[in-house]
Length: 107
Figure 1 (cartoon, rainbow, N blue to C red):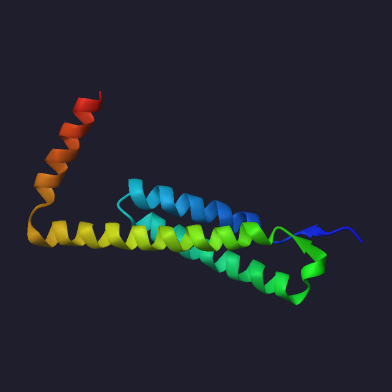
Figure 2 (figure 1 turned 180 degrees about the vertical axis):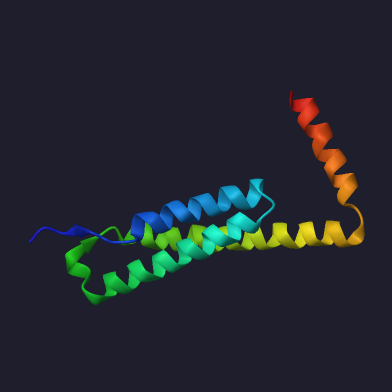
């Protein structure tokens, strides 16, 4: 019998990677959202794999998706907390000016 690809394993890996990227680039919230979606998909994939390991391949993608999703959630949470701190402490405008200067220097 030929082994099948593990359902949800590849999508969990993709969502995990996207969560890391968006946590760093989009103020954190999309990273947290994509991280939770990736974590959910990896849990589904791992549960399916544990039912009958001899039938599926790709459990490495599910495990890697779980790890990258957790990293994305943590990075996203840190970014969201930093954003909330900047807004509530009054340093939001200073940070936006700093980002403008960095963008102008890169251009």
